[in-house]
Image (cartoon, rainbow, N blue to C red; front, side, top):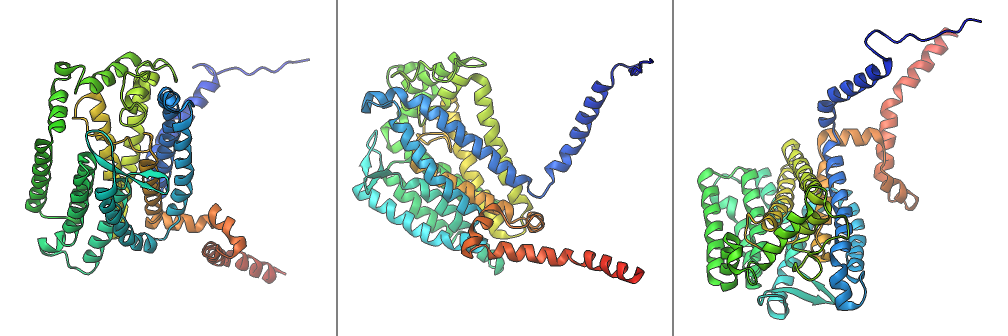
Length: 451
C-alpha cells in the first residue's frame, strides 16, 4: 500500500508562507480600512468605550481606601460612578441616534439652563477647597454645573456660526464674534466667580476652536488668543493659591510638604509603576499620601498600577478619539457638523492633555478631571453625552449615510419598531428593497421569454 506524502517546498513549510501572505494582505488593506465610511464612528465608539471601562476599574481601585475611611464601605464612591455611567449610557445612545435638527435646536435651551445653574451656584453653591464655589446641591445630588456648560456652549456656538455661514453673514469680524463672544463671556464670568480657572480655559478653548474652524482672520484669531492668555494671567495673579501652584509647578521640591506635595506624590506614583506597574489594587500612594487619587490625579494611579504600558494606552486612546473627531470635522459637508465635531473634540482632547500634563509636571495643577476616566458623575455624564453627539455627527457623513441606508434599520430602530417608532428605518429598508428590486424582475422577465 503506497503512502502519499506532502513534500514541503524548498523554502520551508507552506504554513508560514500562507500566514505571511495573509499578514501582507492585511497590511495592504489598512489604508482602505481607514477610508471606509464608518471608520470614524467605530474609532469614536471603540476608544471611548475602552476609556469608560478602564475608568470604572481605576476608580474602584483608587477610591477603595478613602471610601472605606469616610463611609465604612470600600465601594461607596465606585457605586456612585457606576450609577453615573448607567445614566450616561442611555443618554449617549440616544444622542448617537438624534437627528441633526434636534442637535442644533437643543443647544439653545441647554445654554439657558447652563447659565441659570451657574448663576444659582454663585449664590447658593458649596465651597470645595481653597474657597472654590463649584458645586450645587440639587435634589440630594451634588453636581458641578460648569461641566454640562461645556457641551451646551459647543452645540450652541456651532449652531450660531453654522446659521451665519449658511446665510452668508460671516463677512465682518463683528459677525464672527456676536453673539458668540458675549455667550462665552457670560459662561466664563460665572465660572470665574466660582474660581474655577481650569473649566474657564476649556470654555475658551472651545471658543477658539469654533473661530478656527469658521475661518476667522489671522489677526482676529491672534487677538482672541492673546486675550485668553491675558485673562489667564490676571486670574493667576489675583489669587494667592494659584501663584503658589505655579511656583510649585516650577520647583515642587521647594515646598514638598505644602504646595508641591500633590505633584511630588503624583510623580512618585508614576516612578514606582515602572514599565508594567505594580498591578491593579497594588498602589501605595492611594493610602492617604496622594490627594484626590480617584479624580484629578487618577492618571498617576494608572501609571503606578499599570505602569508605562497603561499610561501609553490611555494616551493612545485619547489620541484615537481626537483623530476620529478631527476626521469627522474634516470630511463633513454640513457646517454645523464641522463646527460641533471640532468643538467637542477640542474640549475632550485639550482637557485630557491638561490633566495628564499636570500629573507629569509639565503644567500647573488646574483641578480638572480626566475625561471619561476620573471619578465624578458631573464630568462623566456630560462627556458621555458629548461622545454620543460625536457618534451622531460621524454618521452624518455622506458616505456613512449611504452605508447605513444599505445596511438597513439599526438595532435601536428595530427595537422601537414594535411601538411604531421605527418607521424611519423601515422606510429606508423599503426604499433599498425597491431600489434593488429591479434585478429580480428582469430575471423573471427573461425566464418568461425563454418559456
